Length: 332
Image 1 (cartoon, rainbow, N blue to C red):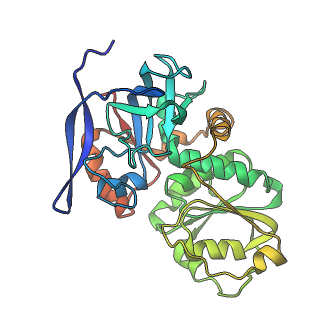
Image 2 (image 1 turned 120 degrees about the vertical axis):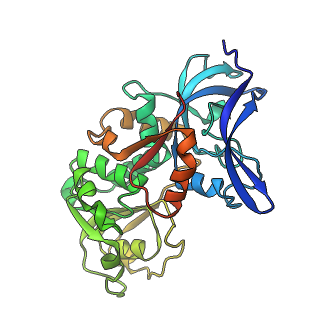
């Protein structure tokens, strides 16, 4: 039984328009019916967390606040018949870490409906190396593989050195797809080839492709994480009956396209919503990540930090200077 009276959390406070992050001692929350209290073992750093930690009101409206849209740990108190004390669970997305306190803390309170049992063959650390980014990559690969097979041709992946892109590359390589990575960082070419990219294209070269409504078909499909011109050119370069998934809009939420790729080539554009993905599909994706999609290079994509190091990594993420995954160890 837990005998602590308080627990540590990475707390963001607003002071006259400035957002200050510190490690605070917080009192344990009261549980309502249908809720769980989880002792967090690991969390992970995502772009939404960085936005929340720096006061982006589109992500988090009210402060003080504890970010962290991912968490994995052990249930220490349960007011739900779905789970028992000592069950190990993963919580990603929904409203975790956005407008409810998240995983950057030793303990977190969540609705039981947000939790997935940690699959066999997946450690807590591996679950957070995947996290929301890996889960999103898994959803992208699942939807893509329903439409495009390895023998159909190469798959292009944008934002390839980021969390979603790097995990997508690893899974696609494991499944036998030929992959082409798009990156803005020449320094990451070797990293991308090590995790599964057969070819690497620089982002500026891909953005400069011809502005015609249709381009030479080069790819059987694509996984796009950035939106904007990159997504436009992926769609315009996709083979007939190919498919492209999209899950991000850091470059732009807008597309300047004709309908020609969709009508003349039958290309499918598939949106990926990691936040409210139905539970039966969540469990399917996590089961695959625990088994046939667990890549041999998974540990190569991760940097492990403590709560005390979060502030520094958040600033690097906002500058686009992180690669792969960053996980937060709450065990120490």
